[in-house]
Image (tube, rainbow, N blue to C red; front, side):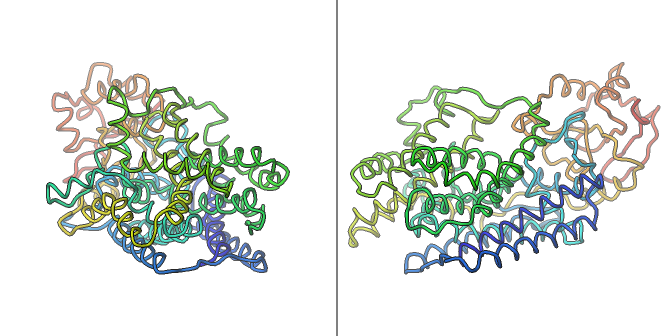
Length: 564
């Protein structure tokens, strides 16, 4: 694996996704022809990048014993995660990880929404009247494959595995073996509880700072692109701005990797913007950074504008002292969540100040400053989502930790220190992957397939009123509903107002239910087992005045007529 090959693959992914988006907007929806053309253009863009850059003095990975060990472990983690990201068991669709239990449904929803004919630019499939502002790049890339006939479960597993595996080489380029180990096992202490309980499981899962592979690599599919692209950009910018003898990527490749990132993961784009500004201004290398900015500014600006509807979406930035700390003791909160990372940062600060290599300081202090910033300024409505920025601060620090380890820990003690640092994270990973972990059922296959097939027979894609659970088959099938799962809406920055209450009154069959249906742009009412449980007191007036257009073991769909 070389840097140019890795960059070419990522350029191909980003180009296919962007081409698919542009052609879908021109045609009005995603078609099979658009998907084929977009994927072909992605292959062409990736091959062109490789051919144009192959004459450069490319950097290859160098493997020692430790690199082979961590690479093998990373390979095992990726295979275990992505081969069981979507599988069938006991008549249900399952996923292995508890962190992916809710996220799998939302990604299936967006993928199926694109495949089933959503108009572009898409409306929010789970909120009436809302323009979609979620960064759906990874889901659109998956939808391109599903549209040409590849089963969605295969797409999720194969694309996840391929892009997930690339994170390993990207980490090796960035911080050698220590970066891979630090990513896989973090440096917490909660896993030491296994020595007392004798139970192997992920003890970090209930804390605010969790296992990085379990929390980000699978559930947050936008990271499959942004981890790879961001690590390559950090590697290249380090070579360009911090080292005089480095071999950075061409400015065009840097700019495209960075500029196309908001569609996949705006948090990563924002963090890289901070780092780029630190290094170019602080090192007096503004002129050297201009070509990268010129390549990135147009795609990044366009993507940010369309995703925010030209900045009409409400900002999620707010002030909150201590992130998720609340009323907890600060020292106890830090030690419980971050464990050995707290003293490791203190030691690394001293090491960076004393080091003759100024590169360590240019990695450590921006990383520490940004991490501190993210403890007070929230860039998302849900405070926990600041993890998506904090993980990058941690990654920025990993090469400094690795250099300190190599210089200060002598060979007889290196294995001992590694064991102490990575034991807790290893317990969490291994415990989560034990065969005893039977996974988590997301959807009943018979119900899901029956509803999806029925929805395709409806005359149009008007909104449907349903119960608001995260894995309701109607939205997961890709069909738009009036008001979806509340936590998704809130965490995505959607201002719902009184719409959830209107939906409740509609489903209960209150006197003005028809007006409420019109206000929510609802044409259809879905009545299944979830609705019967949640709205058991409903008078169900639509049963006498609306047309029953479909029914089955899964429930009944009523047509109220097209909204005025």
